[in-house]
Image 1 (cartoon, rainbow, N blue to C red):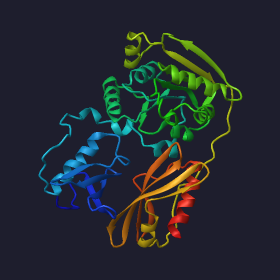
Image 2: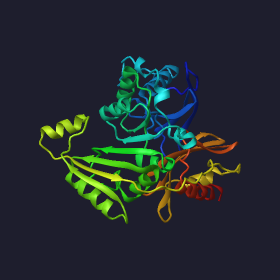
Image 3: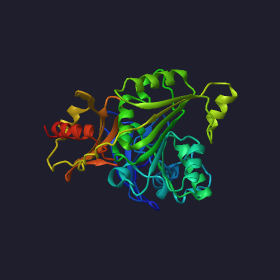
Image 4: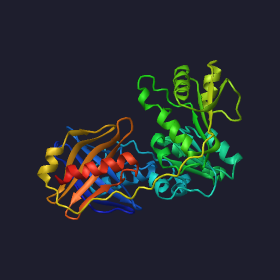
Length: 381
């Protein structure tokens, strides 16, 4: 597939970076309406595979599809197979006002009205109902399943609902950036049980503590699940806290049910509720400034020496994964950093202008501030 950096319509291709450890992989920098993300190009035996890079992928598939089609066009590629949708995406016309990046909430969290949060909204039935019945409340829906996000955006536009914002992000990390004492309710309905990987569960002592801080006095955290194991685990997690008020219910009727709950009820499964009531007024969050790098020279030889190395600290780590060469003076570095249970995948561009995070900077949490300082030490050695 010929390589080209020509632009097409509203898509700009900024660079092509080749994996220094594999001649079969390249990453293509894409800019679309101030959004930056990567496409991945892999050479196979008789052809190439072009797809979006999963960690920088935008929440809306139509943007990715535009970039994939544009690159195929400017590279004069013969497309032998494509799984791109041909559906009309006119219903996504208001997506930018509905779907927000995490930076929106970190920089300017909406505080002019009470907030309710639903984590893992799925088909959106409960989220849409709560928003339509409580129009003075700002509903924030968090979901990582992109088809579900698109389905809910479509319904928001059809129903003309104006008090919902959506976010594609890890809910456990999101709560760290919610201002204190402004959330009325947090819904966690039918989360994935993760019986074999319990560390991936939403409910944890850390999550409950952040919920207590974000909730207003007498605000509520509601877990609803069909999993007896998840219920037992969550109940014990609540009991392990020094002081907490909560209510337990079994097979309670609620106003609106998800399609999953309808399925479980037909199967005669029990439904469990734990509702925690917050009785505390919490201190305000401490503001953390934007992460930046000093303008210092970083040798490519030094970057190669860091590749595939892991640096562990008390409760967090940095793993330098791959190094990509853009040209003689510019490199792209991929790495994973964060808490052991909730790491983030990050890309860094290093060139004659210095160092900067590409596509997404680490969210300004206390853990990431510590790791940002450690990363600077590693890069500048």
